[in-house]
Amino acid sequence: MPADSAYSVPHANVIATTDSRGLPGWTLPFNRVRWPGTLNSTGLLHCEVNILVPVRQNVGLALKIGKITHRVIVSGRANGTVVANFSGYEFTKPGTYRFILRGFKNWVTALEV
Image 1 (cartoon, rainbow, N blue to C red):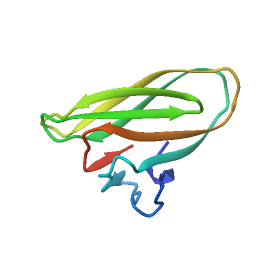
Image 2: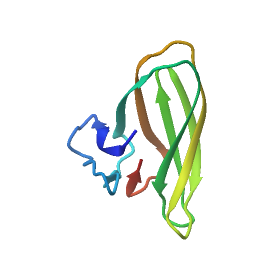
Image 3: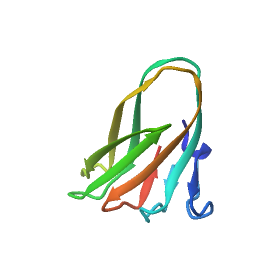
Image 4: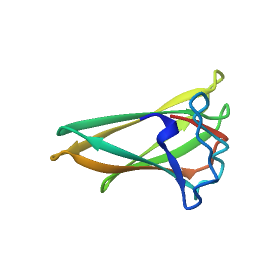
């Protein structure tokens, strides 16, 4: 799902979405990023989030889809963008789901989804 379909909560105007830069300025972990999503089939879902993390900094992210939450910790690299891999979301019925991304350890300055 492209970043420009996302919105932030609890304050909708805190994070601006862009096609080219994702979600720049997402710096407060209590702000969550949500996407609406429709899954047309059943099965195992794997999600990835590309994120800019400062070098030698660890950042924790949690992705909730429906009632399932997975957490990962990613470490910053010299080239900037790292991939947070979320896998293991098993869906038994198609439908519309809410995708919610939040931080839980340290924080970053921009998110690219």
